[in-house]
Length: 487
Image (tube, rainbow, N blue to C red):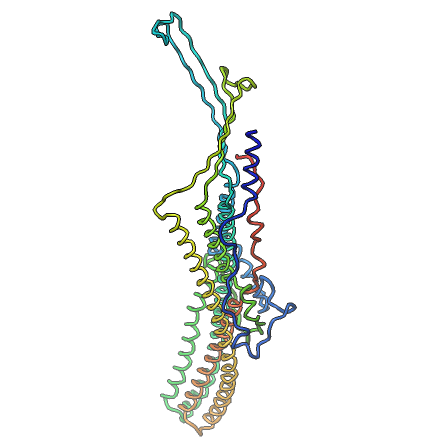
């Protein structure tokens, strides 16, 4: 009869409803389209960024090879992996509340009475004896989850694990974006050095013309010194680029989890322009940004904790039991020596000075904070996308204009050089034209560099190749694992 009651109470606890509010995702401020998306290609299922490997859109094998090492060796990502593993372990810790706690015990008691000992009547017994009792037993306690407190706790921990999973993806995306940015900055440095080297060659031609004219007596020593100064300054600029390039290379090494001394990248150049990036509609951004997913999953975590706080107002129902043996031998495992007991208790807080009410109010306030944080995360995401769309749109126009200026500056230099060689213009005119050409070329390269960096920032703002379906299933995380015997 006692075991039937135990089974009934257990079934009641496992089938009871969970108190507290069920989770519903709150609304978020979403516009129908991006303000800066005019003229941009809206993505479709057939041409979206490749899931995960978003950098493949740049078609750069060396970049792809570096990116493949981020998830494996980046230490920041490993920290996030550890945080996720810890969150999964906390789910298992909460699920342990579904089961009884069983402890083993073994006691041995020896009692001795000598010949001079008095009996209960006050007379001496005249004999001695020794009693031994051995008692192997198992004791169990079980808090029945009638009100769903444990289930709400598991739900909270499972949602927290999803938060950690989204944080892991967000950390990975952030480190990948940092690597791509450092890589394009390095290639821009390579291109800048190549520009300065080419400029040195051009200035040496001007120096040759000036030297010939100086030898012919048609140019002054000051013109010759100015021409030599131009060459030296350009050579110094080419050397100075090495500092930036070295720092970018070191940053890339750290991002792939290697010491800077172990990585050397060959020289390369920055492509003319970044590829076209498909843009999603704003509502899809809610599913494609891991930081938004993390903020939304935090909502369910806090909502479940409200349920835990509500369940604390209800009685706690516990079962305790003991089963063992007691006998005069070290292993009294016989039916005659059997001993067992079953007890049930229910306890409820009657007065706590407002503790439970305060805990519930705090849980609800934390949930409201999470709602505001979620909505702010969404707004920030929209701002970042709009910022990068605007930057790319404006930079593309600026680059077209700057390239035209470079072309005209180059024509001017060639005309002035011919005129200088013919002796119809002064050397100062040539120097000014060449300085303008170099400045325009450096500016055009800076704009191209910004285009690549901002394209990476746009892909990151769009969530890379990630979407919320990649999160581990809430039901899967909450499933009670198969129990295994302790080691």
